[in-house]
Image 1 (spheres, rainbow, N blue to C red):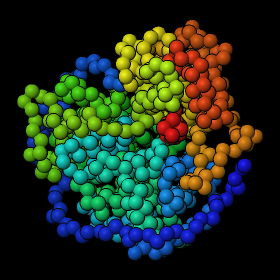
Image 2: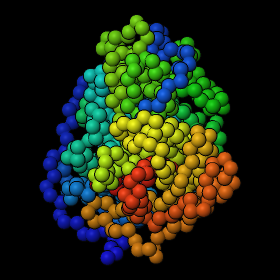
Image 3: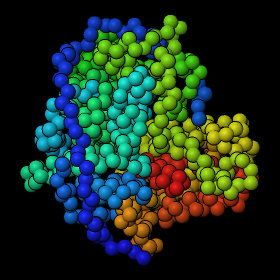
Image 4: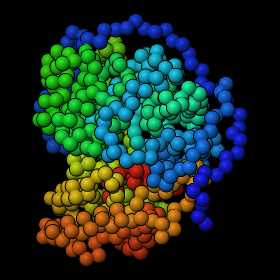
Length: 590
């Protein structure tokens, strides 16, 4: 039965517990933002300048002011939190969040701030102006790797004994993933209490002149409230988009800033050149606040260097501003918690950020730099236990495995949220490498199934603002160069675009309502590529791709195929969209 377009009436909410108590802490004396006299011998030792050797990859609150709204299908997925088992109140919270998503195409407007000055008014309404100045922030922007860098940095500082807050985006399954306290997603109870505290204050004070904040801005404000009230020692903030006009950039005096690898992404907002994109990312740099970046394309690096020089960031020896990839030998044979060769770049940046945070906060005595050049034990532990879903993640399908006669994994998903040309190439290298290892080294999870009988399948979707004629060739060419060919490609719509929030969700529409024109265009690009590269890839275009009307139907087909051919391992690369990654995880983990 098809549900109606409007949201179902909700029962009166239960009486809510009091909002979290804000403890007024004494405001520490403001320290100078200028860099201390160079005391970076320990950092130079940690981040040796020689190139690393080749390294094999390791696999009293008022009653809530309820909005009156309908949830459009295409937008509800962006706020989807997968709370099928959550409380009715949590579902109501998710509905309120969905009402903040603006129904417009991002390409309609450039990055002119979009009333960014309203963030100051929101901070005032929420009484966060003073608390935000007390947060000891690590702030990270970038095109690729900023989430991984933040995850590594938080894990290092947590391993050093500090209470940490981590704000990242997007979430894959549950919106609470964006808010981590001491390495764990915030509890549903705390999330609900903090949400209503912010929501009610904003609903009372906003109107025609000051609208309610948009979705991401509300989440950033919520993060500031959570981290200040929870009295975290360090708040690690990942920029959502760009930098200069990002909601996280209301932090005026972070302890340290970082910019991860830059590339072409969100060009409809940030600009069509690396110079423009780098200028937006450099907007998080602050006068006298130390900052680090990784090797960048020349045109991007020149912009970062110029801006850093203008702000007095580079008055220390210049090479300390540019961080090389981490030398794997510094980890004492421990693998990184996040897999892929590219993660050594992100890990190197995270080490510099964490080390500088410790130095500027006067906590270097908590670590011991070893004479033989390896990282302190806390750093190694933090880097090895770091966890971030949807980035070079390997997940066997346990449903199919439980029905398999032997102990192997006949269906394994290789998940990576790559959605830019550069990240697509990195993803292809990782998949090619790890599946070759799987065949050569039979073992448990990282080597799901031994033997030569394996089938490589691509499960793909991307947002319509992406260019598949750039993404898919990058993926296909890189795999071909590594000797890997896909036996089949499946194109699907994201399941989340059909999901409503909580138990009031409407089912996917009937067949006649599903628009698969985008998926069919992706298939056409793929087939044309195979025809043009038949000699290179060795794959015939005949029967090489399928379009499914829904993700569940594709997963069902994959399971049936693997069950019918248990002598063959199905290795499925899922990529093109983090939303797709979250949808797959939600389906195969239930």
